[in-house]
Image (cartoon, rainbow, N blue to C red; front, side, top):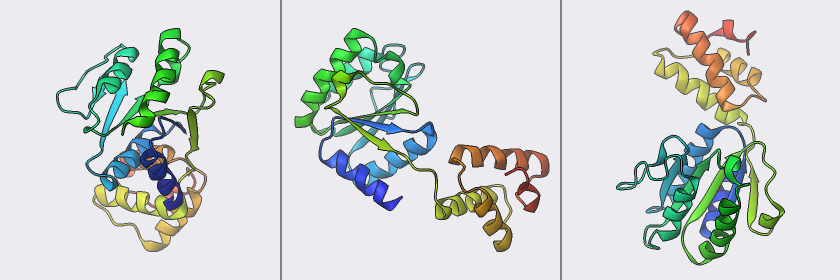
Length: 205
């Protein structure tokens, strides 16, 4: 993931206006973007979804509730000294709207001279050909062995138990090819049933 993170940081620093992270792991993408903003402090991460509007920015909480255009206008008006990444969740559902499509094209030009970026997350989207020259696609790979081991170890610690090294290694290998969200689901089920992770979970994994 180090190379992926470096590529993401490079795109953000290069003022890439529209970045499409191709994934359905919203929680993981949000965490990776939070880490990126920390590396590029004082850059800010703002998160928008249709129900909650913009979150994570003081004095802008709730902006754009049920109004996708308002979220884009908010970023458009944002001062350059408030360098911001705007993560848009489910935004591909609104991209066919003529007004939204036009605004995305406008921002694709305007943001090249401003320290702001738009990140869209979706595993399936057929963007308009009008955005071909403006949209940069970044595929999020599945977690590697090191990330899976850390994830499983952290889940075990949070549950108040320590995984035996051998069992941790076996669970990590068994989880290869799963998304982080899927691993969390399996772990949550195990914790609900037995209150801990263990070798019993290998079959389900």
